[in-house]
Amino acid sequence: MKQEETTTLVLDVKDPQNRKEAIATAAAILQKGGLVAFPTETVYGLGANALNEKAVKSIFAAKGRPADNPLIVHISDREEVLPLVSSFSMTARLLAEKFWPGPLTMVLPVSDAVPKIVTAGLDTVGIRLPANDYARELISAAGVPVAAPSANVSGSPSPTSAEHVYHDLAGKIDLILDGGSCEVGVESTVLDLVGSVPVVLRPGGTPAEDLLRYLPDLVVPGLDVAEVEGIPRAPGMKYRHYAPQARLLLVAGAPEKVAATIRKEIASWQARGSKVAVLASRENAAGYKADVVVVLGGRERPQEAAQHLFAALRELDDSGADIILAESTDQSGLGYAVMNRLWKASGGDIIQAR
Image (tube, rainbow, N blue to C red; front, side):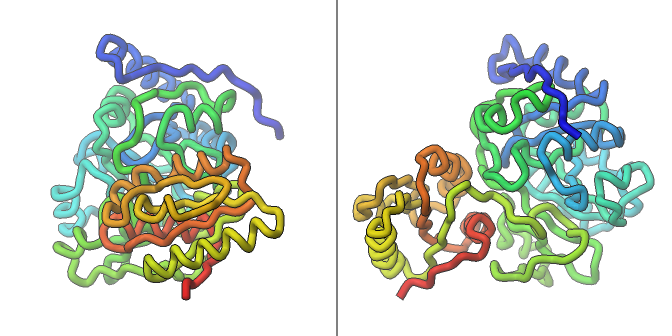
């Protein structure tokens, strides 16, 4: 069934004179069952009233998102988690005190208040309290928890600006709140607290190193963890995500070997008539004779790489490249989340530098 076109309004929430009215307009749309894209510190979210099954269904339609991919529910205050879960452990309370507001989603036992479409029928729900002021003001004004995946076409690079959202979803959603560029740039860390030990289901804006201070038995899977079958417990676990239109090859290994391997790959692909792009560190960018070179950030600055990653992938799409060669990054701190996204974007298509 074809989705009807709608007029998508864009309101600048950054302007202090417009802020209150923009938030009120967006909140009214959520209350009526509409769709609002809004900024968070991680990426832009596509929000609907999490307690309205029909509204939540429209998220899946707008994004082209598989129905077995659960949604994260966003709240504006720590206490708002309680009606949404059947239990809230002492560990969860501690983490909420330490990391909320912030880029951490906790997977908890779900209550009957949350429609099954939000959880894909699972007995758990992911809850997050965003650090972005605009996001919290919107959720508070709406007076309802907000289910929100990233505000993009399913599978494509996540949006970190209102322009990215408009490019993907104009005509499919009611409103975009323009809050500028996202600070963190990669999605929240998803932490499963339901099993016998805590497990990172998706690395993200809260580094595992920070969680380990409070969770010494934390399990952090490797990048090459097998894709799940059936219903995933968190977004980003089953389907190809964050992918540009061109084929992306991730070149892994020591930095000097990565650079040498990419130079050889550029020549090889160009000899075959391909337009070649490179996603490069600032230190190596000048040495690449590719058709397009996009700088992700400094090798020792994973937070910079995280902030620029999705915008860089979209820029590479706009370049019309046939092949994208991406440097691997250091996996400490936010670097692990960046590598996770590059791994996903490549579909596991890895070249080991030698």
